[in-house]
Length: 172
Image 1 (cartoon, rainbow, N blue to C red):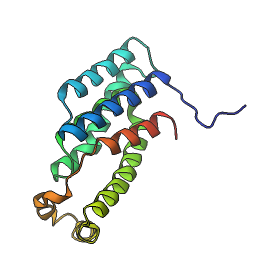
Image 2 (cartoon, one colour):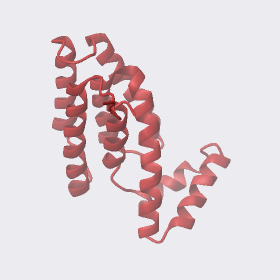
Image 3 (tube, rainbow, N blue to C red):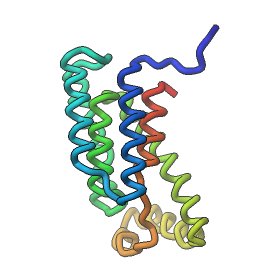
Image 4 (cartoon, helix red, strand yellow):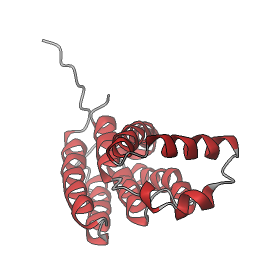
């Protein structure tokens, strides 16, 4: 019998799923992702790699953290994501490694885009949101200040990170 999923590392998949659930619940309730969660997850990922409890070496875990940080930090710099989102994604990198973090980032962007559309529809701001997104692309980021000041564009991003990271952890 063939399996639809090829989970190469069940420890990482379980840890990513657990951290995803915890971060989503906390982010939706408080609009923050606490350092205790992100730093605890990073410590677990590094320890699991060092103790060979998962498929990564300690070097791969550190590189995964760095790739996660590098991919999410620009979004924080332009005001699109919070610092907790950046730290969460970097911490997940210690479990997934550098290569899977690229996939996780792409899946997270897709999930985040879908979430933004749903939230824009709920808030009756789809036209305005799409207009700002097109302007961001058209002006190569020159309207970032306008987007940062638009309080209505804020929403919890942990659900997108959780979905994207779990998809990568499951090898989708």
